[in-house]
Amino acid sequence: MSITLTDQDKATLRTAAYGAVSLMAAAGAAGSPTKIATTGSITLASATGPIGHVLADKTKDIKLDAKSAAALADQTLPALTAAMSLLKHQAPEEADNFRAAVILAIDAAARTHQGPSSPALAEMTRKITAALDAA
Image (cartoon, rainbow, N blue to C red; front, top):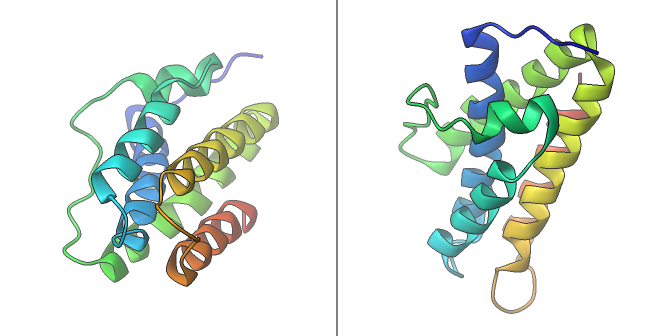
């Protein structure tokens, strides 16, 4: 099935996905935020199919300029829900692919955290998953 996404749609998808990885990095700050963000970003850029092409296209339209984890969550969590709504409306199988790519990226990012999983990391994973499922 073919999917047609506007530049704004693509920006929403990228902001949502890379924002989720950024939230994981912020929540895992006791570990290595850089390693968490890098691992998650590589995972997103490795996605395949139409969604993979969107996520791999690293453009300047990713707007993640929040100054705190709370502000980043306020920006990212609604973007995740909007991205899922958009994809469910246009191509349900691509919504599943997007969700799987984001979940894989946050799982990969969480595995880079040193030591036992922190409550903040677990809570951020829960919030990201809930935002994906809210659509």
